[in-house]
Image 1 (cartoon, rainbow, N blue to C red):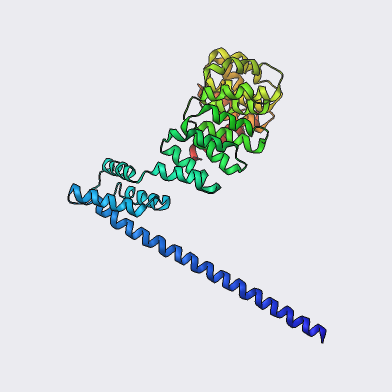
Image 2 (cartoon, helix red, strand yellow; image 1 turned 180 degrees about the vertical axis):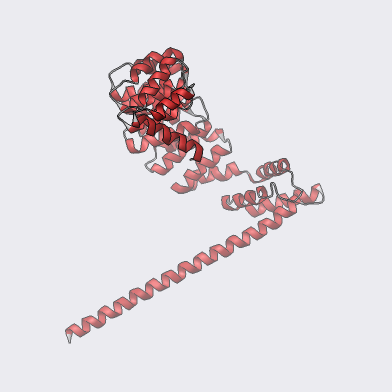
Amino acid sequence: MKVELLSVIGLLLCLLFIGIEYILHYRLAEIQDERTAKAENIRQRLEIHVEGVLYAPTVSSRNAEIEALAAEINGDFEVYEAAIAAICGHKGSKADTDPEAIDDLVAEINEQVDPIGIYAKMLDEGDVYHKGYACRRLSELFAYEYIDKIAELIDDKSRDLAYNAAMALCAFGDSEHVARYLLSIENDRLYSGRIVNEFFAKFKGDRQELAELLFRDCNPYMRDTVIKTLAGYKIDAFRPMYIEGAGGNDHQYKIACVKALAAFGYPEDEQLLQIAAKDKDWVIRSSAVRGLSLLKSPEALATVKHALSDKEWWVRQTAAQAITKMDISPRDLEEILGGYDRFAADAMKNVLYKSVDGP
C-alpha cells in the first residue's frame, strides 16, 4: 500500500512538473509572439515615416515628418537603429534617392534625436551588455567627450565589458588606455595573443606610440607578441630592436625579431637573414626564407633554393612559395622539378598546382 501511494505521488509530481514546463513554454512563446508583433508594428510605422521623409513634397512637410520620426524614436536605441537601417536601406534602390542625400538625412535626424545622448545614458544606466554596446556605438559616433568615462570600464570585472570599452578606445586612437588594457591581460596568453593582433588592426591612432608604451612596461611574452604583430606594419623605428633580437640568444625574442625583420626586405639585412636561414629552429628558418625572397641577389636565391630541401615541410613549402616570386630562370625551375631532390620537386609542384587551380 505504501509503495502504491509513493508511486501515485511520484506520478502526480511528474505530471505537475510537465504541466509547469508546458505553461512556461507556452508563456515564453506568447512573449516571443508579442515581441515579434511589436517589432513588426514598429517597423511598419517607421517605414511610413521614412517614406514620408524621403518623398515629402515640401520642405515644411519633410521637417514635420522628421519631427514625427524623432518622436517615434523617443530615446529608444533599438527604434533609432531600426529607423536608420530603414533609411540607409534606400541607398542604391531604384527610387530616386541620392546616397549623399541619405547621409544628409541621417545627419538631420541625428540632430533631432541626439544618438550620442541615447548611448551616453545607456553607458550610465545599462547592464553589462548594453554598456559594452554603448561604448562601441559612441566610438563610431566620434563622441570623444566620453573617452574618460569609457576608459574607466577597461578595469571592469566583466571581461566582455572591458574588452568592448578597450575596443572603443582603439577606434578613438587612445594609445595610453589601450596600452593599459593590454598590459592588464598580458599574463593571459591564450587571450592576449589574439587581442593584440585584433587591437593593432583596429587601432586608429599612432601604432608606433602604442607599441612604445607596451614595450616600456610589458613582459617578454607581450613584447614578442607585439613584435610579431608589428611585422606587417614595417615600422622603421623598431628595426634596431629587431636587429638586436635577431642576433641574440633569447629564443622567442629571436623568432619574433627575425619575422619582423624579414617583412622589410631591406638589402642591408640580408646577412642576418642568411644566418637565420641556417638556424636550428625551423620557424626562424622559414621566416628568414620569406624575407630573403624579397631580395633579388643571387645569394638570396641560392639560399631559398637550398631551403627547398629542408627537413621540415613548412620550410620547404615556404621556400617553394617564395621562389616563384623571385627572378628564377626556366632552367632553374626545370632543374628543381626534374632533379633528384624529391622534397624540392614535390614542394614546387604543390605550389605550382595551387597557382594554376586556385586556392
